[in-house]
Image 1 (cartoon, helix red, strand yellow):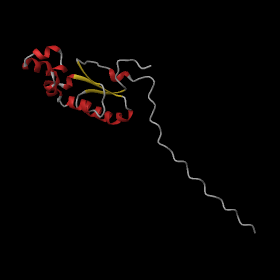
Image 2 (cartoon, rainbow, N blue to C red; image 1 turned 90 degrees about the vertical axis):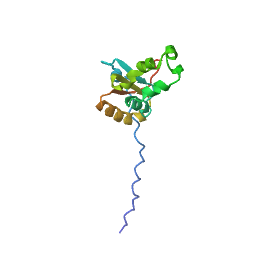
Image 3 (cartoon, helix red, strand yellow; image 1 turned 180 degrees about the vertical axis):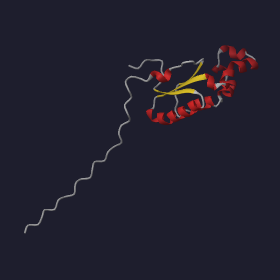
Length: 140
């Protein structure tokens, strides 16, 4: 009798790298930019982890604005009295009266920002974290 030939075990499956992140649509989602009913707008040019938006929503910008050096304000600031300055910055005590739009160009940072957006919107804030960069030029 002839002995059966030994067969080699099949090769292991190739290691798969994680799938690439979903491609961004060539057509931007502009719905995040809608400002229906907003009398005031707060724009954050780089969301990162949402720190500035969180501080703004918590009402911490008033004291920051009051303590900022005069170069951060319009020219008339230097000649204004304390009461005028407080009145000028008063809207910062009412962050819910603003539409907040915060731009983030790094797709990997968007998932936690989406969670933060949902949390802030549940608290009554009109907040949108925009998937994209803020610029004064049109991308080619």
